[in-house]
Length: 327
Image (cartoon, rainbow, N blue to C red; front, top):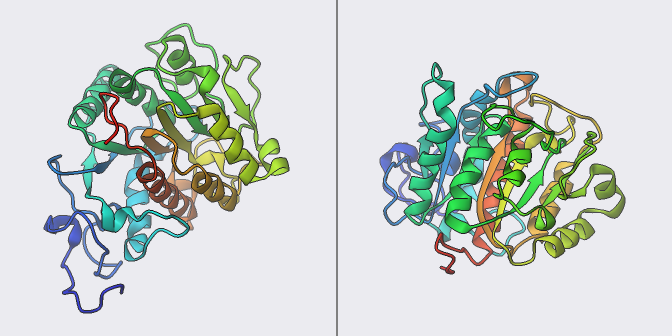
């Protein structure tokens, strides 16, 4: 325990008492929330909130990512005891962070899902609160990007992934986790010249102008040089970061719908994220964690660590608000 004299909180996830500070309760006890932050639908006096989107109806292979948000929360509990390793910022003690719960939708009316998710995200963003989202399959990033682009303008996309997800698609109404960034580029939501995809190891003849640092390049140049190159591409532009857990090699994250060998190691991912401290991050997600395909829970652990580092990454930057002003 970091503060043994502090009275233990019974079920911090539901007490609503403290939005910052270390957890003092047993990890095997109480309701599951991300980093033991209190559940709250109120956005008053909150710096950042996390939310889940348990949607996997756009997957092209193995479903199961609807269980991702719950698994990431459960895996994160142990991290609530200590300061995030390797960072000069400590969101646990310095920020008011809540768990907003999951986005609710009618699984029988899938055509209504994208617009409803965009409205849900817009409400959070318009309140001045930054949001970190847990998927769900990767399609969810598309309606989320629409809300962020409306608030921050054309975005730079920083995508960690085995797949580019820019395969051509003539129908923007299709719900597909492999074509949504094709539409995002075509619609001007993201700026391909100042966007970068990291860890790619599947073929796509048309990159739409997005910069690609594929897995082999990361292995060859190392994570430090990779992070330096990413910073050069992004500059000080507003960035949306999407981390598909299949960016990691299946040895580190087997629980995902479309695993591809030859991916990043967890150590490489951690170094890259920490060396990106200071970028202008405005929104972020962790997607494609599929617990049914990982009996060890390692994939959810990886997702929880990525999520914590994304919060640190956001806290290390200028924290730009939706009107373009720095907070």
